[in-house]
Image (cartoon, rainbow, N blue to C red; front, side, top):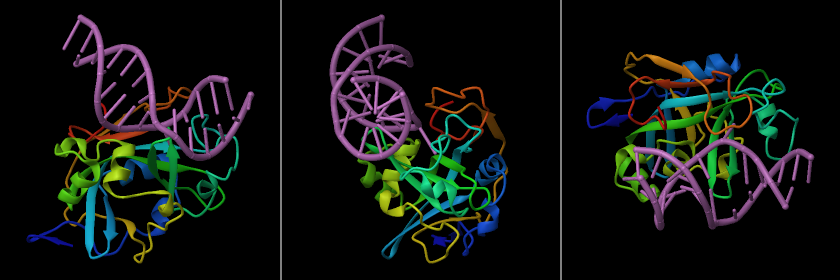
Length: 204
DNA sequence: GTTCCGATTTTCT
DNA sequence: GAAAATCGGAACA
């Protein structure tokens, strides 16, 4: 993909096998990857800068902790699929399903650094401050026009309108590992990861 | 800067 | 009926 003369991400999405591993490993390694949204002829893209791992039966903070429901069933399905849920009566949140088929787990995408289609994202969010466009799980879904319709979408399928790609020119960064945000149980588990020093991280 | 509160779906008690 | 993987605005300091 070209922006001016700068190539930002590889043509093919990350293979589905990338997600069929330990959730915490996937969470850590997906930092720096590019989230890509195709809307008609246009493209929105940004760098994933903050994530959290949510496991299943062994993680009290996970939606899958008490088993399968209508809402969380894609968490039990194929790795690499999007789990999008509606919460607090207002917001959507984007997760990527991990682990083998049948094992409930996912990585919550908490923040993205907008890089392509920035003006469209700012319009979607009704804000003009770039640091407020996608610096939170509810914010980034609105910026990227992600809704319930994207639930179950395969992020490793090149024909999907929502995909994840390796950056063309990876940049070195340090990863900070800490506790998760916005939960009341299992607050001690250090399953939140973000890129050190990145200004788009939701909270530091 | 901080804290409090309303928005109002989905799930669980 | 209450809490939740959140956000933005109002009130206060």
